[in-house]
Length: 208
Image (cartoon, rainbow, N blue to C red; front, side, top):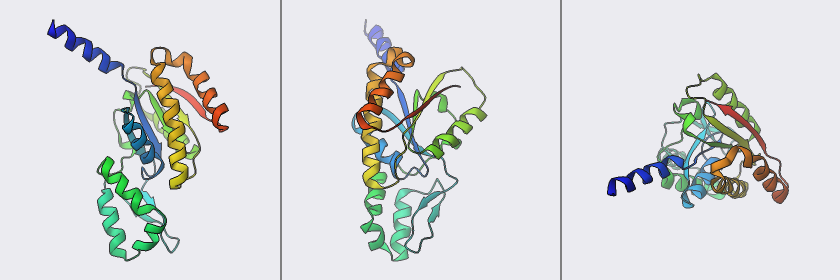
């Protein structure tokens, strides 16, 4: 009897929707969404799609980091540059502190092998959405598993990132409620969000 219960739990586990949230540098928009999704108990992974992780700099030249640079190391480098107040005033130190609590370092979507595990990939910028779709189309399909890719354009600042994450979370929680017939339900779920927030969403389906 106990074994049977374990099997039921396994089946339930398999049915959980898996989400990816994606921006350019896996620093602001995707990490705010990662935080909010995680707080609600959703299965979420966050990514960037850029060649480097970039933070603005006081002289107008961005700071560039490799994707495997830890968020803690980025903060230390900023402190060493002696420009800590500029970054603090713009909320960038708070952003890095938040990120450290979520995971060790940024991740790049193109370098992640098992993207077919995700049911929904949510992007926060049209350029990111385009890069991500190009990457998906370059991958060899294995099981022809359905992946929904959704984009909401969100300005890359802390306040807008919070609002964008709220909208993404609301849609994705609605998807969890409709997970047994997600393909049929999704167009109406998207329309409901567009009507409520007066913001357009882009959606496409890919099989991998």
